[in-house]
Image (cartoon, rainbow, N blue to C red; front, side):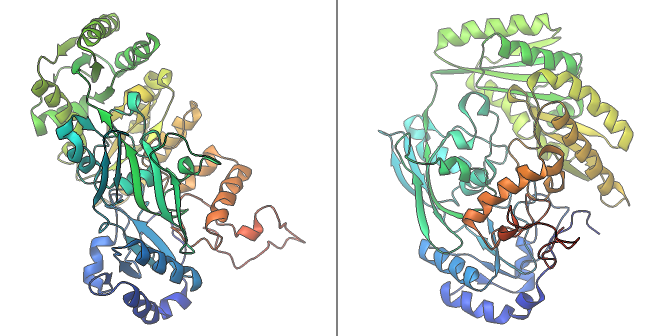
Length: 498
């Protein structure tokens, strides 16, 4: 029995399944529509694998015209749609609905244009994050945001969740690296936002779309900026006797005006798991490990390495190792990039959380997290983007043991509430999805949430795009700010409120 409830399916839509199927097959012929139960199993979940649900039908369009016609049909016939990329969402953002069409964009997988003069690449949303860098690296360029799933995650999904990665501290999240979008609204209308130029006129709808989790439209084309590979990049591997010492070092590095290309931290359980998995040469006798990468002109990098080394020693560092070659630098990062699968070897299951805190609160939060671990009786391994305070606690549990999934989710909820309590936010790059949906009231007031839903209404008045995600209570657009309780009777009592 899953703890997170989804909207009850509409029996009228379920009864029309064959009619809907035939209509979609006419729009996307051949193998573009999947309706066999066994074949749809591949789409029943995303990376939040504790939750599974077969969709009504799966559609794999290949052209913008097909996407437009599918969405227009669903809008006219009141059929819900869940957009999906590679399915690597850790917050349940691509979880299907029993009465909804799952719209997979993975056949949109081409690089359309590479413009080195304007430092821009135009791709379809199914191109992988790493695929963009692979397309331009032979000319000395790369795409900066690099989530750990970059080998698999799609750029369309990165936009939906505003993904980051180990280099987002200096070079920004997805929102800082996207220049333009083509997208299809639920009505079937195709619009363009931004382009290769730096700034666009009017409202900043491009930023609004980035991180909108599939609630506002379906992206069919993406223009991103690419960067020239820095002249030099070197990394320091710094071990500390406590996580608190490591947290203070992070704050002191930033306070000194140093902005590393990447700054990541792992605690002891994560260090051991990663070292067993990758053999990156991580020290095993430390409680916390910090990876600090500095890039730019060689003389500047050499100077900054000396400054970071001084700051690390002042914070009690017990182990300092500086990369002497590109191969060694990549080895340092190999363990961090493999930390998530590595932890999978020490626990049957884990929940990968995602919250963000002010950097100065790192020591306090890490200490409180150990107390929460004792409270819930579950282990936790910490891997996180230390430079911008984006935490990724991995809560270890065994789904085969009764009650452990519930305990893990309660532990995760307490961590996220802690993030908000110290002045942080519920998510950094994984999105809200269903995982954090019911915690939104811990961060936002009812009026805050209603205002956010008014934006949703401007794009999708019928709430057909990815319903059940992000908002803990479903309001009809007519209800927001226009209706009130009369003689104890709620307006539209038939609206599902979950």
